[in-house]
Length: 168
Image 1 (tube, rainbow, N blue to C red):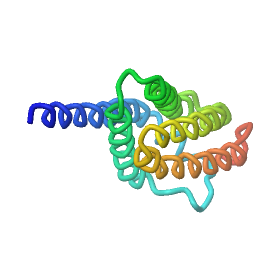
Image 2: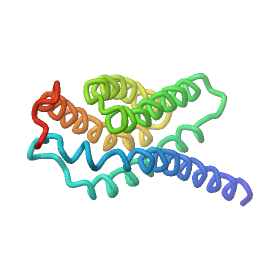
Image 3: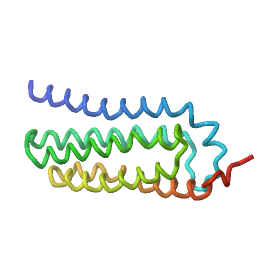
């Protein structure tokens, strides 16, 4: 019984950490978002801002569950350690994107970050799948969202390069 309780506590910690850290970063970036971002020319498929506040908590919850499942599969194993390291790198790249895009107002650099995130995320999913197949599958919605974000980021960057495309 104690093992089950400690395992559930670990799941709660994984999920909370994955949910809380990015949400704090997004709150910090949000105050920079409105004025500059609102003036950018964006494609018609740009989601409404409220969709991001729905999608990200779901994705972070799935990520936390996946990371916990991998951790459960054998702390100390080389494969698990590799998966955890890749997970940390992709999470760091994810966390860097908002400040680079919204605070530095650098969509081109943000796109390069997304490319690195995408590659690292694919490697993470591969390692997660090897450790626990369900963990790899739980990361797939995140990969789809990052892929969509890269397409959107690229189009916004293309439309607004050198200040062109800014609404007056």
